[in-house]
Image (cartoon, rainbow, N blue to C red; front, side):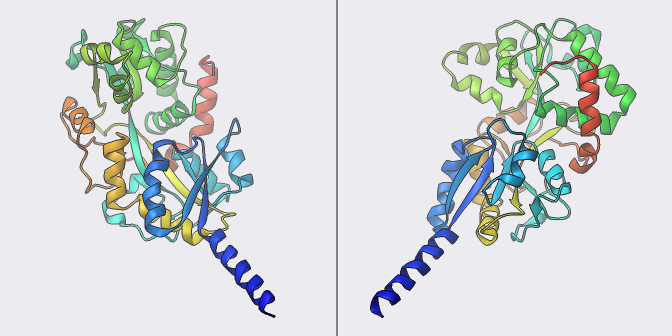
Length: 336
């Protein structure tokens, strides 16, 4: 009888331990975010691990992932997952009064925890007053002077979908054709490579995610050129605002531990985690009461704002256009 009681106790403790571990499906294996989440584990006792999607598209990976949560660098993907019925409504208690609606789903299925801005990086030989807006990237004056990654990439799928939603199809077609005509050939490499080429004088401007300036300045091989030759500017600050890519999180429909999953969301949206994200990862926090400092504050001063003005077009509106955007990108002749 004593042995049976001991076995029951062991099994109950094992079950409790399983409840205290959650898994995040992600395109990346944790990285610096995992270091920050260690604070969550210390505070709650809930372990967190990551499983990556590999080469699978996130929308295909989500329904088969043995995970409780999903994070993505492009919030549009979670809006698509929501529409496909792949997410569970969150129960996390989040201070939504300090998180703008642009960064969260009005129905409560996903929420952003940080964001980056599609920014213009420019060589210091270019007058800052001449740095183009998003629309002006297609101006023939930038022919042979623009570095860009291909538009057939998920960052740019989302970016072009937003442009289509806000400018219409005719303007978007002209814009895509103009950018392709202006681009330094071959069109290759990711965002950091485009910014590096600008710093090396191989082109005058690029469209690049905001935080890559830090990567260039922290890399011994690129630091000198970046510090001397490279500047950034936030588009749209005198108009509707810059375009933001939103790092987002959601609870999966198949989550085995939704309570613990929602606890992690509460942690990520809390003040201290947001402060860490801004200071260590050099991304913009979604909380309006967390002011950027260090590099981000300096980045803001370059653009004459401390916190960027963000275009408020809902992600859902852009997602309505994403499939058509992909078609227009392919029709314009961009390769992956």
